[in-house]
Image 1 (tube, rainbow, N blue to C red):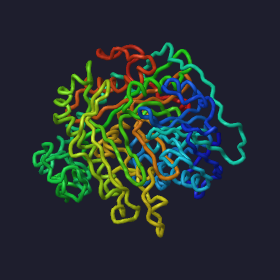
Image 2 (image 1 turned 135 degrees about the horizontal axis):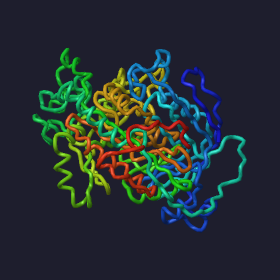
Image 3 (image 1 turned 90 degrees about the vertical axis):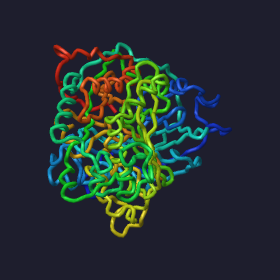
Image 4 (image 1 turned 30 degrees about the vertical axis):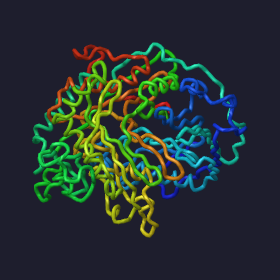
Length: 583
């Protein structure tokens, strides 16, 4: 594998390998179908996983469709930078030196290198579907100053399945004359002897953090409301492009004059409010913060990631199961998807914990999620996305009202958004700096005199991340609180994760329900909850336990009883990991 370290301060890119790329269908009569598939393609996910190598595996799969890479041709990586307007110190404004603040963000650094890698590659794509040709799997750190690398991994081989077709892509640097693909089956190994250790933020510390965050919000002032009775957002106060999911004159669902459409200020039935000194004074007032905690799982033997991925995919077929650079999980939330210039997103905020049967508990979920706390939390997340994505997509449309996303252990409030990406520098995109706190700087496609083109998926992600679903409202105040209370590096948790191809297509989810491998038998799991002024510490702790459950089950582990607090060596905070992730 060729590893390319990207220095944000460098004017020129380092030397990048020239790649030979070839994609072809392997589900037809072609004699080039690789072993062991000549006798027929695997019919079950477990059968397929058993024929993949344990190491250097990458994947992005939903149900039976997606991309799986094995081997690595190239890794692009960078870290330790904060672009202009970014927040740092795990989100603390002003924690980055002035000379570092002028450097391009990790999004821009990786995007620039990816464009150059694509430009120099020789690509023979006989498939023509999104995810064919040159493809990279990517995972970016949550915070601009995280110690974790933000990466793009280009696999040596990639197998894709979409619209009932299956293909193989061979990616090799020029001069690589290694023998063709040869896969040997090996049984999946379920984790053995898993035990759960406390992380950087224990259950007891998390309760205290929630109580402190809620008190901070109540102490500054109660959630502000606009003239329409809706929670105000920074975008609405600044006269930005916002949306409300069918909110009417009194904040009730379904009564907006133009539901779900992102347009000019005030178009969504009063979601935008009058500006001026009063609005400016409200801008820094904390109204929501997403606080997270971690737990460490150690096993007796090495963790077979294939077995973990298979369990996650089987248990959560509607989620996106992923493995990128040792970040393993199954996320229900799509930050950004781009296909042929169309952008999509799925926002989740508001969670009901399933007790026994999700189908039987829908009425209870509707009652909870329709109440003030969860409705306001979801509204913040929707407005956050629309404020940052709306300027890039003049026809952006958000669901008129949220729907219930039913998983086996939780039920979420969910809203989908869809639009067309406008060329950067056009009227829709000119001068748009993204949502407050987003990491925006002028990218390659925005240079003076450059031809107008739609922004890349990494450029879009830079404008959108972090949304209120993983950060808070307003972003800078929430980030400062997160850094102060958590006191830990989230790494790639809650950052963008997914894939991108040479034609600008791709999908980036939010890295949730996941863990980062720190050793072959050790993985650190993370989960968070949206904290509001009226949050209950025990309820929020239970929500994080429900969100840790998918990974714990896949690892054969269970959380200890947290109802009565902790004693002895499991209490309080532990030191964050010192060793780099295994990726």
